[in-house]
Length: 62
Image 1 (cartoon, rainbow, N blue to C red):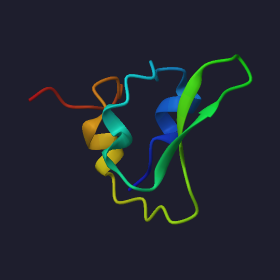
Image 2 (cartoon, helix red, strand yellow):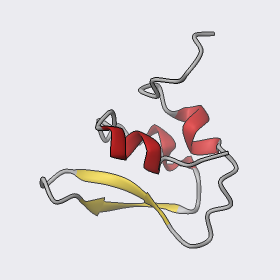
Image 3 (tube, rainbow, N blue to C red):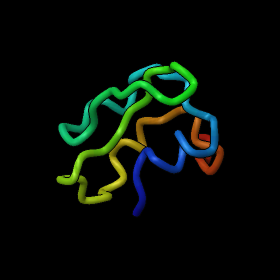
Image 4 (tube, rainbow, N blue to C red):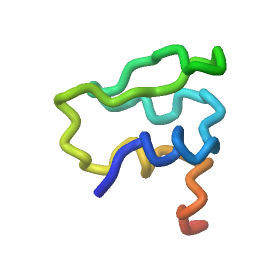
């Protein structure tokens, strides 16, 4: 699995906070001045944050 970094790096993150249900995520200010989620070193890449993200371009519509 991967983590929210893929969404942030692709520019798709809107900062909605849906992914923050994971205890390994926190907000940081991006170089462009926006708050974005960042995974800490405890991230296991379980995919919970990706599953919560409605802006994931790879998400399959339910």
